Amino acid sequence: MYALLVLFAGMLQSAMMSFNGLLSDSIGLFGVSLVVHASGGLLLVLYILLFVRKKITLLGMPWHLYSAGFFGVLLVSVSSYCVGILGAAATTCLAVAGQLFISAVIDHYGWFHVPKVPFSPKRIPCFLMILVGILLLNLS
Amino acid sequence: MILIVFIAFLYGCATVISKMINYRAAQELGTWNGSLVNYVVASVLALVMLLGTTGFQVDLRAYIEAPFYLYAGGTFGVIAFVLSIVTLSKMKVFQSTIFLLAGQLLAGILFDLLVFGNLTLLKLAGIVLVSVGILWDKKVTAS
Image 1 (tube, chains in turn brown, red):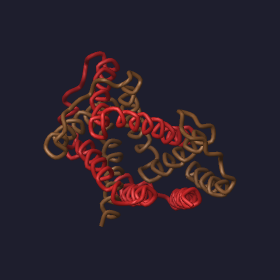
Image 2 (spheres, chains in turn purple, green):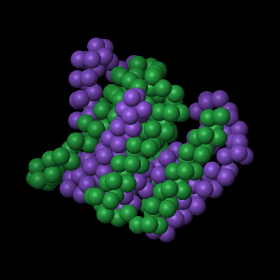
Image 3 (tube, chains in turn brown, cyan):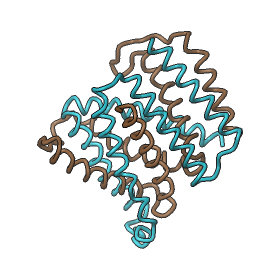
Image 4 (tube, chains in turn blue, purple):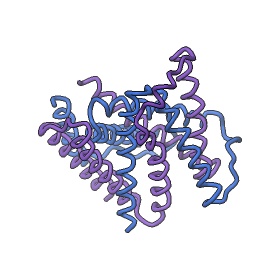
């Protein structure tokens, strides 16, 4: 049951990326980013007030953590751009491959104060398979 | 093509950095407020960028003329976020990641077929190879 909900969440994420890509043809990448974050933020405020019943507080963090918003704009704009050219499935695949790669690097060197986890050679065949897949995507 | 493939790859890398910042924000302000910060700052920043790049000449007619259903993206994103948070305590992170990815790919392939109409056999082969490689790697790292 919960697995189905998560599957549905994944489908919604993909639909969001596709819709954003299509919408960016009309209103541009920053327009999409504004609409997505403003509408999403408004809904999240309602959800927090009605269902979580927590007080809304946004202040009091170390200043650099507010860069989350910068990444929000960057990620929505870039994904909207990519999905228009590569399609939704290929963009998702490449993005997850990027996530695996940078996570492995971060873990290996212990960047951002995460516990060091050395790269396991067992993962090399998996990464090679991903690389071949990326090359095919690149040719298509 | 190679450039856009590389950009999509870098986009994935940036997602991880973004997740780490959001995770720290959630530690400071709680899961919900920590995530709301992202939306609020991003809205302000996107507005500034929009005004800056258009020289304060935003074409409002384009916003009205765009198909209305396309504005549902933000709503989808929030529902997906709430679902993933609410279900996370009920299942293993590994399972959650796999099902999230499966849903993304399933819907992605459907959109490519039905909306974008750009799904070739070679591309499908690439998607399958990358997906299997990702799942395989998840299995290796989870054990």
